Image (cartoon, rainbow over all chains, first blue to last red; front, side, top):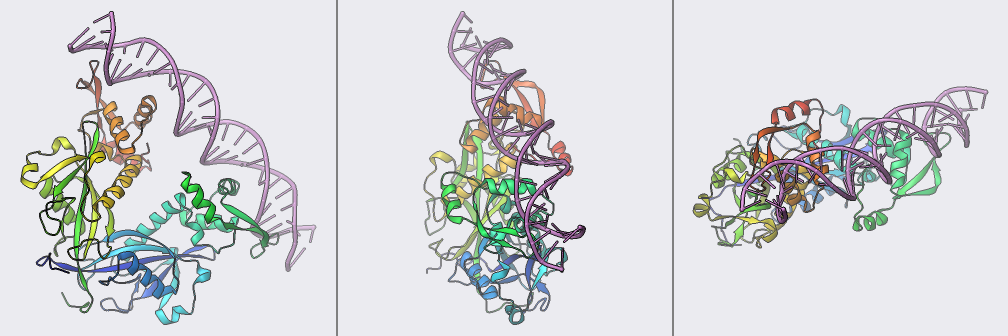
Length: 229
Length: 229
DNA sequence: CCAAAAGTGTTGACCGTACACCCATGA
DNA sequence: TCATGGGTGTACGGTCAACACTTTTGG
């Protein structure tokens, strides 16, 4: 490549990932003990520097794969953080992404290798730099997204019950929903398929398992349908 | 500053600004003839490289000031574009911002100095690199923002009529609104103050001028009010 | 048999939308 | 006087929120 822009400054560009999971009725976030100086050993989001041969999305996929072993996770660019002093080490521009992991797919053995730990959002430790701001922004975006896109399903097992789904929404939105209204609304979209099996984990009666019909969702979207709960 | 991250790559980081205005009943965008190689002389968004001593927001303010002579414009970070080949010159990560200008405040003499020109969105030329994608994304965001925040007023004169406001919304949303319903809804928020003066520019009868009460809006927001139209 | 969670309908309030006519005035 | 845009009210249908009891079954 020719040198067109010689004379302008270059910057470190990093990716930081806010990784959400849902487990035991709580919204959780995957955090790491930082391995680099400065702030080595403190809790932080998973991140890494952008390499020359990869796009921002590709870098994020790489980082997500490295820390979870999973591909094709739901991910979305959140915001770019660029305050001069945000990283006390050197100046770094950080592009934050948020991602959703089905905790059932996550291999907990990775935790030992990587120093990772799932933290309930409500009891999260103080993070390095501006990472707590990133998490706040991600939580706001997650609320909006679950309201207007079917991304909640990315956090649940592939087969789930309506009460589980409701409990997820309640965790994300930090408020209760009326169960009759919730069920009515979600079922009225006709995007859930009821299976013939019940989940008896959390009650004696058992709750029907459902699965989300992504195919049908995509075809409805083409006709102008808009998910809204 | 110490050198903590030596060995990692650095990248050019640029800001690109999607600048909207509203004039003659049309939504317009401010475009420039690019002064740098590559693609010198082609139409482009206004942009510039991030300097070491400024944050992303500060860089955007600087660029907006340089090209409009105006400070305190409404601006919002939109998205960061990072495909490897997006700039055929060298690799550049571009943080896109969108901004709103009251065209009455814009000094048209600047156009000669800077090679700037206001283009109606509907007749915009092909832009360099991925700038057309940036504009599309900005238009989507502008739709959302005008629906849920009172940012439309940033595009109108400080004193405006209801029909002007409606015409702005119609331009942004590319559809007509019923004028009775529109008026009802906007006035029911009690955020507009009617002045005793009429604007007779566009009709013999004249339309009342209004102004947006930002003070009142801010105090309502504190009480949990949410702008929605 | 009882505790605990799953599942089910109705009603009233509110909001969005559709719709048609009179008003004021400059030319 | 008439053409032009400004300004006004009502009625209907759909959506949201509030609300309480029955069902199932493991212990």
